[in-house]
Length: 350
Image (cartoon, rainbow, N blue to C red):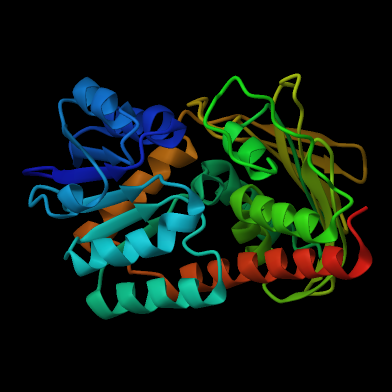
């Protein structure tokens, strides 16, 4: 893009802002410049803003009232996403990049998309796995070989993440040194709420990819929490059995994030890099039924860079707004989260 870069305002100054978006914008250069960072008053926004030569504030009002902010990045906790998207639209902002999900309920998803569509605002959801070049490569392989998909598995093994540990705390604590009580997974209501939150916070990374191949969600076959923090969910979509598993281990295990697609003729495995790092694209391994193995090399471009380039294309008019696709992704995730929670409540937590 030639000319003055779009001014970017970042809401939230946690790992997503520090490790993902600010470094990505520095890498791509030219089209965007961070001009304002806001948080809830922790002081992290001040430090991040200082590091990139931007202004900082507490709350969102000053950022949304800043005339230099044209693009709003939402990196706040998921429960604030919908209201902050709507506030940014009411403030007349041209474009929004929101970390997933855009809403925690069907009503929130519709409200966000309806308002974006009415105002013609560009919206990108930070589902970096969708934008990863490896996903495009895997889809091309599936289309070229034409084998029916027999099953899909999305597996996550992650190091601790304080936001999700806070989800399973029975009571909030002001002291970071205070010990958290052990979660009572035997309480179906508690377990259902945690698993629902984890689906909309973790599984949501891969659900748009799964919906791309199996768009009609049918039912949850089983759902249960996995200690210390995680889930195991089985579901059916378009007649295809799909397994979603995740666990966070307190010992801080090496991250492993894979999506496996089993077809009539081969298995396609996509291995995504850990979150919050810039390690290039995912890797793609294809194993044929005849024993042949094809490993596709990783690319230097990752999904974070690609999603920002996608936003630039929307703003320039090179790409159309895909409100219907974003809406469908949002409803798909909420439907699976709701059905998983209902299954746990009705059948028991364990």
